[in-house]
Length: 115
Length: 111
Image (cartoon, rainbow over all chains, first blue to last red; front, top):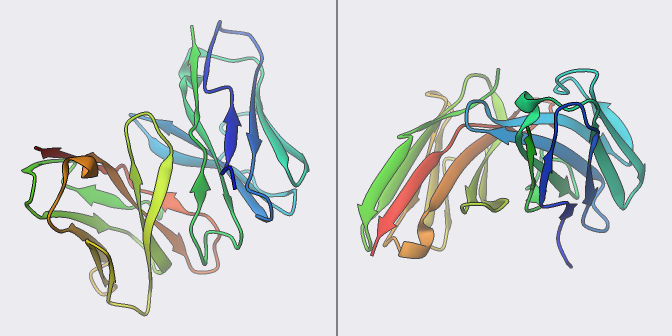
């Protein structure tokens, strides 16, 4: 299997622009997680899906952030409008059983820089 | 918050030495996991230990769990330069699917 695939790997944008990050989970995995990593706050869970349904989005920082999973093989994280404090590495991870019982498989991340 | 705290924040050792990293957490857990992250890459799962287990081994890795102290340790024996990475502990609380990560220990193994 190709693993979790994220795109773009790097994104540089200007404040106020819309940013869309994409994720393709491992086939057959029922759970999908979006994390954000910064030096100050470490890894933060933003939202997770089970069978394409958002289960917990309490980690989404603001209404500027939204996430969708239209089908089992694709998810997006959108930031509109973006702000410099959104600069971070965003990771997508998938799991066949949910992190309560097993490991997460992470993508390589999307490094976002908002100028 | 369930978030774990790793100790030390940074560790530098010579190749061949053992590396020990510690993790503390705040509330009851279902399981505790350790991950490795190489610079600029995603996290890779290393090992999972359940709350009813006390020790687990995987190759050169040894993980212990002390639920009474709410702490875990990761031991890497006979370290190699390729072990240079950041190591994170992560845990889930009872009935939760949210895996909460600590801030990690940055390990440098000097050849």
